[in-house]
Image (cartoon, rainbow, N blue to C red; front, side):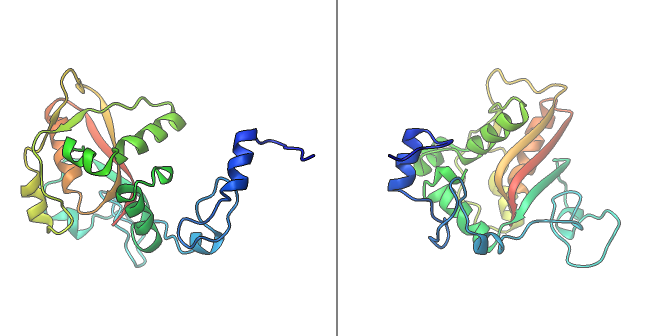
Length: 215
């Protein structure tokens, strides 16, 4: 007879039939983990110094606050955006699987995008963060114009592509509120800035953002 400690029978059965493996290399990992120690060691966290506006890391010795060239020469409507990881290598692969490979366990969309992917990645991340912080999560914006993917566009093209693509949802009221936007990756910040512009125009006091990764 096998005694099960701290595991529900169903969880134990699943673990036996489908032992946990590393999302990247397929190596063995502990239950509840997604990366092995070797792959996790390759993940690059964003640490200071970084841009106070968009969290772009700066490779050098600087102790004072600074704004990167990407933010300094254009109008940006969000107050600041922070990201936990550099969106390269393993992190980029994980996010790609999350967004396009339907790997939801790895946790602003138009309906067409939702049908293409099968889920809203930003909504999933916001729901998880809301549960951990006890801060309510609400879908405040909706995309009213289908736009081409931003991946192959430069900064100016992204801004033009997104202009007037979002609006405040019906019955959503942000007047006097401090809003935190959640998404998976920050690239140039064009999407975030356009969303922030709409929210501030609707009366939001401030708009900050938290992303999983910074491209």
